[in-house]
Image (cartoon, rainbow, N blue to C red):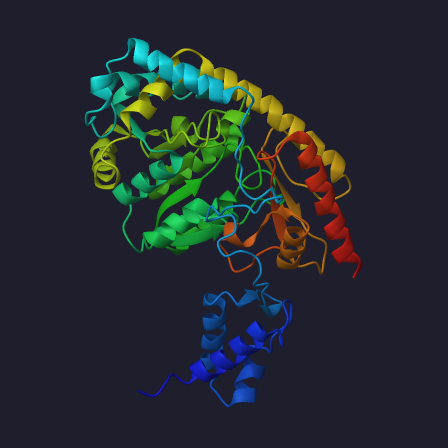
Length: 449
């Protein structure tokens, strides 16, 4: 069988990139130039670059061209959890933890042994959790988040990521258009790819700190058949914004006008004290609220929950049954015990203080750089100076013993900014200070070149 016309060109360029003859950062010929050089059609040249991007060897930047990408950045950085080499400080993933949490786990397990019906924890549970467990979560949502729902609207899932998966599987179909921020949570991007959803990026407001541009959403809904919107109005990952009550009211009106499904991700909402009420309070008939305890308590505690309109509960339960059947009884009992005795509220307050200290360290060490973030967030966004490529920064930092993420895993549009996200919650305060100083030094060094 004759190979496609583009394949020999792809093979030749790939071989040059892998051999180092085309080093990272090299600007490749324009599509027209490539077509002329190889005597191929313009559409074939476009296919060549698409294939190189699919191989992870090139990256296209709107208005700038196609570049050889830095291939020593680990594949799946900020998306796939990878082991961090000994001696490397992890500013890529967040594992916020506080002293004494292991003792808290031991105490919780002893309490289960002393007072619980252990036999019940070994049996199947209802798909969405037992009634008293759902009531426990409903009480937490009302008292801590200002979201009043009936326990029947609450379903227990295996962490917030599972909650997002359940919501998408239950309410969306392959090909559905989902409006998302131009920079969004990589876990949702990965989920959308697996479920064959079409992501439509929304730019941020002009100042970049007030949330996505709702006029852009209106134009999108007028132009395309949008099925849903995925949003993080309370402490956005990675930009840290907290949207105003007026913004939430406007979004709720758009959701109603166009019959959208709203998926509200509140994984980091506990860090934003005195935030406006959740979007789910403004559009309760159209919103699935998703959160969990992985960030507020422990990342190994895969306990999450959704709160949704009553008519959607059977669909969500069917998705839970299809994926995990039910959340593990021991995990659910531990989590509910900590919700009831005030442990979760205490940890949330302590982690807000801890995140505030870490943000202050970042602001001090990186003073003068255009750092973006919420004052009580476990991550910061660092746009890079003109001409400094994010992949080169990531590689230089990895060689210096610091792991960070570039903007690429977060980007949903073709315009990928040169920036890095700094996860602040996984190392001690002094190692964090040292790691951030390394970030500053590397950025300065590459800026001066």
